[in-house]
Image (tube, rainbow, N blue to C red; front, side, top):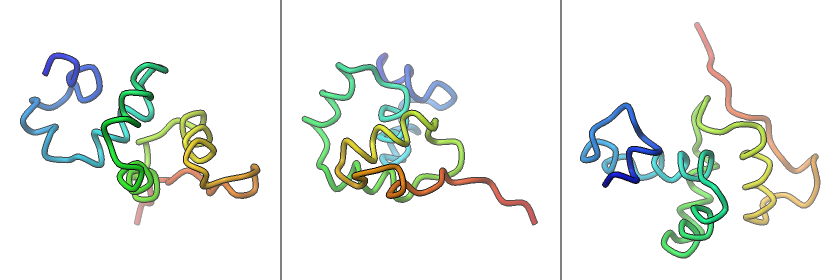
Length: 90
């Protein structure tokens, strides 16, 4: 559980585990190469795609956003990568 707080430090571990998509996105965004390999070997590809396709504003940095679109085969070139999600105010 200690490693979990590396990614979701603002929630208790039990709370963090309830939002799998958010946890996956945090590892995708903040993880190092070893974390990436662990994530890919322990989480189904569809869950990784679901995390990026349903990401909320602020979940990904531009670097991680681009990396994962290429890594998951969702993009072959820059024009295939959608804009990062943004917050909308009424």
